[in-house]
Length: 300
Ligand SMILES: NCc1[nH]cc(CCC(=O)O)c1CC(=O)O
Ligand SMILES: [Zn+2]
Image 1 (tube, rainbow, N blue to C red):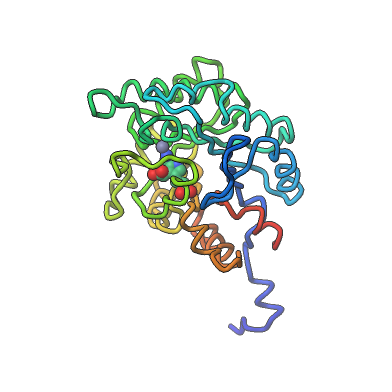
Image 2: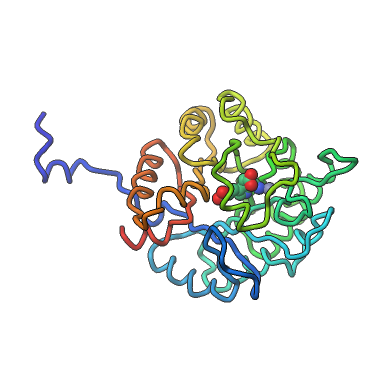
């Protein structure tokens, strides 16, 4: 069948990437904190302008990461209604209530260790961690979050977050846990957010060679009550995406992480990133979460 004529190629091309496929990432920093970091950051006061722009471009969601200046062993700031995350959520929602606000629900930007969990006697305290994550999710939902994102990779934490949200009356807030492979691509993020683990590793993340464990962990999150799954790094988890697509009905959201953004845009050209996301859409990714959402949407 001759399909190389330009009109036929254009006719058959697609489905193309659209701004609605993309979720913009905000790494929020406090006013007065230094802006010179590996990854772009934003202060709360800049959120309205940015949200107006992305909404005008057709982007319909943002994923927010925000830490605390004050770090302690209890991650106490992570549950404060005055915390940076809560202020950022409220600012997005006040600007554009129709934008879906996703959060990261984790402790690594709030603990003095940079670990995603609380520690007791030198070991992860799973029970205490699950409780704080539940409280954090409720605080985020109280501030207006639509989709919370448990990211510690600890079994049971998605169920704990669901239970805490329901008890607080937030039965309509969705949960999108992070399904995370161990990766060297998180350095830019960790340096930017001050969230490098003191232990030097994230023991609950999946080793890259463990294909079945990745799929089973994702299915376990769904059984715990996940409505959607975030997969990271996006380009290094496509096999897992394809397998989960056949095994569960949850929406699957590749997260293109800091190292992917840095490397694929190092020459200032966002087209390679857009190509990668076209592939992720082709592969069945429901939406794509990316630091490049606004830059790509401007070009589409
Ligand atoms: N707390 C988990 C988490 N939340 C965001 C990232 C990385 C995101 C990125 O690199 O853009 C990670 C991974 C990690 O720190 O191990
Ligand atoms: Zn974490």
